[in-house]
Image 1 (cartoon, rainbow, N blue to C red):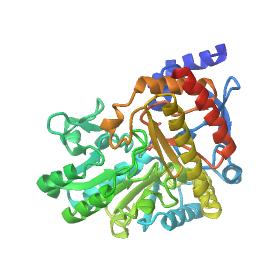
Image 2 (cartoon, helix red, strand yellow):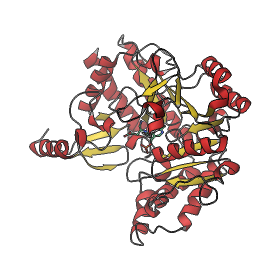
Image 3 (cartoon, rainbow, N blue to C red):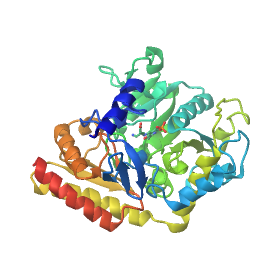
Length: 427
Ligand code: KE4
């Protein structure tokens, strides 16, 4: 690290908690200090020391067209000269709503907000208002943003008793959140038999991207749909990450399940701050000012975010890159697993659409509890060996990887060369 970057890092740590504005960026899960990004283009990040990294984090999902794609940057440039925020309706918000409703099967109406956290916290408020019930069920390893209700760990002892997962989350709030292992449909069935009439909703990442990448087992999502319908609870798909990534219409299109509400973010902003929640018209019309459930936001539907997001969504619809994206993700995850297993290192992996994941353990990994059994030290060594060779993987074993349209077959080949060298180093 050069003196300049060292100086940046020292100043950051002096004034920003942990030196970062979001904890996962801190590299604390993998060791070492984060690099500082100077610029980015296509599949590549460039740090303040001029080093180039092939980027598989892609801002944690939003950049499905890669960095600084011209359709996105030109749209933002056209808008910025016309103003950056109005606090009044714009045509771009109507276009964004029409695109989301047109692409996401279950969404009849949608409200734009400024982050995935705002989307999920409001969807929970709406679910509670619509059902008159308080409890919410989530699954271990699923992350739904940092609203109090979702910062709850599975309680020890009583498997479903929620306990605060962060100081500052009150026991009262935590007790209203029930937690079960992902993919355990029998446990969900048993819980609803005893407490079903108290449960407002189930929140689920239909494909889990916050434990590493974990796929739903056959029948799991269908089971959640049937159980919530039987007990009068709402099914909420948190597609902030999977939306437009596991398929054009998200996991609900891929698996053919229609949730009552869906939360979105990331891709719909083209890299600018955004979130959204939407779903059944009869539910969404309860939102103020149409109905009594309150939610608001100074910058909701921001003209720059909708310019970038509309441009990105328009490109996805017109160019339909989803098959290429899926092939890139499959070739990458398969190539990494092959390189590791050929070197005698236990590994498993999968991909779905443009998301991919590798675990340093025998597969298939079906829950966060199983993901925690992977060889995390080996992951750290692999992450560092790849980073030293210019490949940037998510700096945590419990994150999914992404690809973009900029990750051409040549880029994937280049990365797999690096992977083979990194494996030799850690084997
Ligand atoms: P934001 O509030 O960070 O926009 O979205 C929260 C959120 C909600 N739901 C899902 C499924 C999510 O994956 C996220 C945010 N994802 C993390 C990555 N695991 C964002 C990265 C970070 O926290 O810095």
